[in-house]
Amino acid sequence: MLRVAYDDPEGVEGRLRVSEFLTSIPAIGQTKCTRIMEELQIANSKRLGGLGRLQRRRLREFTAGWIADHGGTGDRLVVLAGPTAVGKGTVAGYIREHHPEVKLSVSATTRAPRPGEVEGEHYFFVSDDEFDRMIAAGELLEWATVHNAYRYGTPRGPVEEAIAAGSSVLLEIDIQGARSVRRAMPEATLVFLLPPTWDELVRRLVGRGTESPAEQQRRLETAKVELAAVEDFDHQVVNHEVREAAQKVVDLMRPRRGRR
Ligand SMILES: Nc1nc2c(ncn2[C@@H]2O[C@H](COP(=O)(O)OP(=O)(O)O)[C@@H](O)[C@H]2O)c(=O)[nH]1
Ligand SMILES: Nc1ncnc2c1ncn2[C@@H]1O[C@H](COP(=O)(O)OP(=O)(O)O)[C@@H](O)[C@H]1O
Image (cartoon, rainbow, N blue to C red):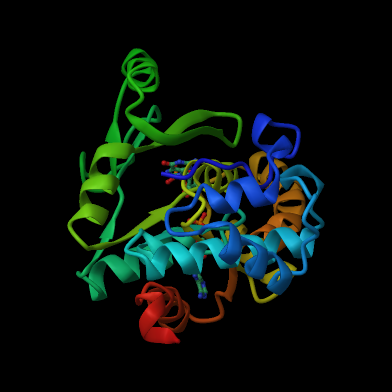
């Protein structure tokens, strides 16, 4: 597994030369590396941390394509993220119901179940101690404290098993989580779900009626910041209509080879 923090130029990996990074990929030798860097318009001396936004994106797309074409995870791991109340849960629920071939990852959370939520289906509801244990044991692919409240994390085992078995896996997680997945699995496809308009996002949050007015206000402040993260994602899908948005997400999960 390649572990390079494209969005963490301060990290150790940021000091790695792009040429060293590329030649660490199986089947890329010096000659191919030189040709690829010319194609990506990246100078020979560049380090990962010194890449511009466009260069970073070109390199990431190249790596994802290469890994997909050489038997890696490719488009089979898709992360669906976006601001509060944009409809992530609704779109993921639609995919669960209408596309049984897509495996939805079930997260662990420290929040209490809501009426109607089923253990192991919506979430694994765990105590703080158990969540600590899962982190310490390396059982979580990523985790985050969401809305300053509870912790949520993606159990690593089921995701890796599903991918190894050839299935497509969808993670419906928050934006911090999406960034962590990018660090842990750079070949994953990141999808940002957008609202048709800001006013519609506000309408959906208020209409859902699950948060107090003060909490709604806090989430909208966070949403403003989160919307700026859209550029770091591979694809954007506008959630005008649930069925259409779900179809666009599922289409992205088809093997890259087939789409070319
Ligand atoms: N990082 C991360 N975020 C998650 C995970 N599971 C759910 N979330 C996010 O946690 C947030 C809260 O989810 P939930 O408790 O179902 O409430 P609601 O979506 O606000 O109604 C949503 O933004 C989810 O996308 C996870 O495993 N990891
Ligand atoms: N395409 C859509 N059109 C209209 N309303 C939607 C759409 N998608 C979701 N909603 C509604 O918006 C609200 C927030 O959706 P939800 O799935 O809970 O968001 P998230 O999981 O992103 O926080 C819910 O009341 C849901 O029914």
